[in-house]
Structure formats: structure tokens, C-alpha cells
Image (cartoon, rainbow, N blue to C red; front, side):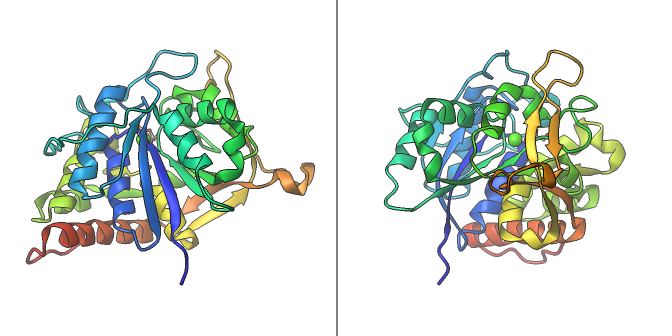
Length: 327
Ligand code: BDR
Ligand code: CA
């Protein structure tokens, strides 16, 4: 029997973070979801934490939520309201959960959970927001590094950007945090725009999710539909569901092209602030240094098939079968 991978989700839900949680919730045969930690990013820390609590109930996860950093390390927050809407979840209105966030701050929560792990057990941290919480954790409590199996994160790009011509939103929002994480020595997998821009849902697929009688599929469709129609994605006719990619990679690595690289990020105040640098010159580095990887490409149709199937399966498992659903 293969052991489930223990996972903590560090996120800023956020439309695609919320779809990613659904995908992860649909794969509990592979993932043991231990907790969610929230970070300021797509919306304020209050809103993303509220969304995380509501999502935990909606996906019937029953895991703790710890509220994290309310601001990037050196800068004021930049929210992504146009993509994620005023609440952070687009057109989707979830039932309000009576759950409360943990009393402990997310950074302390992470530290406690990691340091309490028995023996040689390790946890995978999946980060789909700015890396602020994880940077604070690694700076304040470097002794937990050995308990982190790897950090698989959505952020950055080997080439190009989305919030600026050369920077991706999560790395742009807190490049200082990204730098701390990149230089921490913890094994990393960067799921950046090179792959995530291929990991889309089309307008037709989103419309079908919205029209389905499946509660989870409809909620995800309502979220993705907002981002699709309120941003320049409407001209592409498809919307990238970036934050699903780290989880998809852990379940289906075969649909991605992956390259080893040493990561860095531009923390200057110039026009390339937040740009990630991927050094692919493996021959310049010692073998032990090369335990970080970058996703360079993805099989779009497999991504779509696996994601859509997972959403319907989760909806059916949680809320019962609906007639006449197709993809
Ligand atoms: C990333 O930015 C956020 O708006 C999304 O949730 C995703 O994590 C994509 O650049
Ligand atoms: Ca996110």
C-alpha cells in the first residue's frame, strides 16, 4: 500500500485556489490534507481566510484553517480584485461556515505541526499564493526545514509574466519572500506560467460546469466564469486555472515537462521586479544544489479531462448523483 502524501495548503482563495482545493479534496486517496494556511494575496487576509473556512465546509474537508500574513514582507499588499472579484470567489456565493480560524498564527501553526512530526515523516507544502508565510517560517524556524519534503508552489515563470511583462502575480506581490524560499535549501517545484498558462478551461467547459446540476462543478464554474469574463482572458476564450497545477503535478507528473533549475527572483525596484530567474545551466552547479525543478510545459487536454472529472466526482460523492451530466 502506498502512503498518502501529507499536505498543507498555503493559499489565498482566490478563484483558482478554490478550484485547486476541490481538486485536492477529490484526491484524498493520494493526499492526506492536514491543514490550510492563508496568506494575503488575491484579496485581504480577512476575505481569503473567510473563503477558506467556507470552502472547507463546502468540500466537507474538516481540517483546520490558520490565518497567516496580512501583508508581504516589505511592501503593501496588491490585491487581484479584477480576476477574483470583491469577495475573492467571483460569482460564487458559498454558505457561510460557522467555523473559526485557529487561534495561532499560520506561521506558528506550521512550525508546530512540522516540529511535532514523528521520526522521519515529512510534509509537502503546496503554496498557491505569495510565499510570505513560508518565508517567515523558514527564516524564524530554520530547524523545521528537514521536516519539509518539498515546497510545490504556483508562482513565477521561466519566461514572461502576467501582472507585468516579466513577473507573475504571486512572485511580484512578494519577491522578497520568494527569494528567502528559493535560497532556503528546501527542495522546490516551481509551477509557473510556462505550464500554468496551458492549464486552462475553455469558455464552453466553464459554461457546462455552470449549467450542470452538480454543486461542486457549478461553484467552480461560477468562480472560473467570473475570471474569464472580467479579465483579458475573455479575448483568449479560456481561463488558466493556475493553482490546480501543483496538485495536478503531484497526481499526474507525466502530463508535464519538467527541468531542473536553480531559482532566483528580482527584488529590485525596477521594471523587472518580481521576475523569476531559472538557471538551467546544470553543469555550473554541484549535484546536491539541483533539487529544484520547473514545470516547462503541460498537456492541456489531459489537464482539462482530469480536472473536470475530479470536480464532477467530488460533487457526486459529496452531494449525490445528478442525471444527464457530460463534459
Ligand atoms: C496566481 O495569481 C493569483 O491571482 C492566482 O490565484 C494564482 O495563484 C497566478 O498568477
Ligand atoms: Ca492563488
